[in-house]
Image (cartoon, rainbow, N blue to C red; front, side):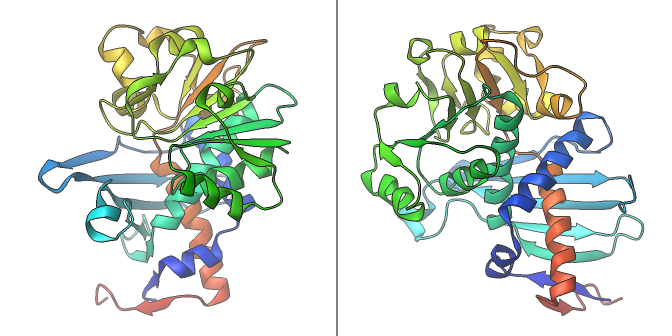
Amino acid sequence: MGTLILTRAQVADLLETEEVVEAVEVAFARHGSGSTRMPPKVYLPLPEHAGDFRAMPVYFPAIDGTAASAGVKWINAHPENPARHGLPSVLGVFILSDPETGRPLAVMDATELTAARTGAAAAVATKYLAPPGSDTLTLVGCGAQAPAVLAAHLVVMKPKEVRLVDRDAAAVQRIVAAFPDLACRSVSLEEGMAADVVCTMTPSRSGFIDHAMLSGATHINAMGADAPGKQELDAEILRDARVFLDDMDQASKSGEVNVALDSGLITMDDLAGTLGEVVAGKIVGRAEAATTVFDSTGLAVQDLAVADRIYEKARIAKCGIEVDLVGV
């Protein structure tokens, strides 16, 4: 048996939003129960190229009748790619391996995979942490990640209104056009922050979302901060909210909380725990009338859970090209 090669288009065809949300929810539960092995992601800064690379290894042991699996994602972040080179700012590859032998089972595009699992992670957080009956959703930042986040949320909630916040009117219109059956409209940041669920997806390095903008029991998926020095929320929000990280080690160093922690404005004791612990039933998620924040940095356990699904579906559908990659 060779190594299966799957292109971006093939991966996109195999992805089903409901399946991805389900897979990511299971991944959170496994991670929260301690039954995964995932070193923190490794950053390779490339300031001379206005970007960086990230390596994300992960292992699932055999559990509940599922086979053991392992893999690694190699992915970049080059924000200036669209303007400089006409390329997406994020491009990735996932290598799925047999943990018993080390044989590479598949090499697949991880660009679509990453977008889908990131949207799914936010949706799982909303499922467990948002106020009951939430029916308004705001996207702060309507770039490349926004469609996947919105699509995944349609699995866990039925928004009566989707509020869109972005300085780029064309980006807003792309969301409106992509979801014609939803009541989507452009709003100010202040109006957007009054929604039941808010997803922030900007590359900000300053806390531009002020505590005074919040009203009532809001759930925030803070998704823009994925490297040291990035932040979208001011520290007062983090001090007053129940804050859940996707991974304590990784997010504390590179997620939404990293700046507030480094500056001493909050401490690790101020954090409620991880989303995985909530999904696994180890800790309580939402408290009555509390603002909740999910600090999403993106986990390799999410990638592996989705890559496993893609690989199995590709084998059944006889999709992709099998090659003798390593000559054995």
